[in-house]
Image 1 (cartoon, rainbow, N blue to C red):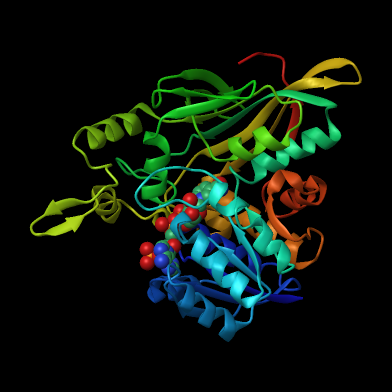
Image 2: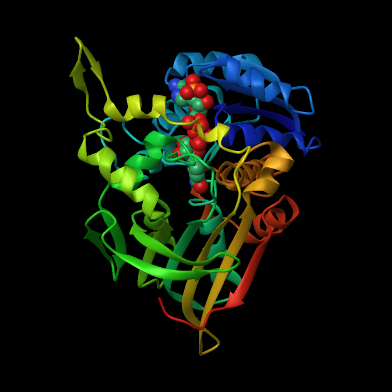
Length: 395
Ligand code: NDP
């Protein structure tokens, strides 16, 4: 059916390649390109189908344009870093190719987690008749689709949404992040924020928490964070009164993070070191294990989902929609841990729906604005089955 160009040979990129390779009638030709060609080569060598690889600096629009002209893809999947979103979108516009990513654009020097830069591409994509799908990972991504599914099939009005992200796995390292350390630590150390009655309410970083009893995992302390899907869902779920996001962290993780913060290792500004400038967080990333290398001995599960309150047919109701994913099973299937897997599978599904024309449009789209039903079916078929239950407690 078509050709796909995947940018980024990290933890998520490795899963996207394996999952696209499993659907050959849609992804007939695959090219994986990244900054370090050796990482592409490693993924290529463990992919059961022949794929092309290429070296690219995705910060350079000219490099990206040249690569796209050479490979002629129908779609570019961007699973490099959020810093590259705009240059890859520019290259797609210049070459007339559709675009998909899993994380919103971030400037290098400030943690913002804001869609505006990419929403500003709306007219340019529309004028060229192209589609850009934003945030097709798990959160954002599947969580947005869960909300859209609930809005379409389970509620007349949704009043509150709580998104809960639990990783109850153990990778055996004293400290490691499950996706790119720079982005992960920027996200966690920023101020918390949630949306209520049209207002954003800010909180001190990690200052609010609840104990939540996760299915198959048990009670875990879950901290209020700002997460990027809150911005689009607050706009797109009509009648919504409040939306919050919670994520679990172990005491061990938080202690390491506190020490790193206290000594300045999570700073994202440049500091002078022996006559050259370095960014402490980038240096820390170089010391930490790569997300793509955590899989081998990872045990335990992730549980990510949404609790929605509202009404249907005049009756008050509350439902919990979630997926449970097992680190070791992901490793057996594709050689990766569950955080990379739960991001890479939805990226493949979003790409599949675009390549087959099931999801089509002109402009820039957040996931919840598209028909959730085919995506929900595909989750069940491609490794991320979900459950819907009534939820009787309040959080
Ligand atoms: P990794 O750090 O493991 O991989 C990132 C890859 O991008 C690396 O291979 C890196 O190359 C490559 N890269 C970085 N800069 C460039 C560049 N200028 N040109 C070309 N390639 C480049 O990160 P992850 O795989 O864990 O995460 C990938 C993306 O997925 C991130 O944007 C992250 O925020 C997002 N994500 C989204 C989630 C969701 O649920 N929506 C959840 C988890 C992650 P090199 O090897 O040379 O460093």
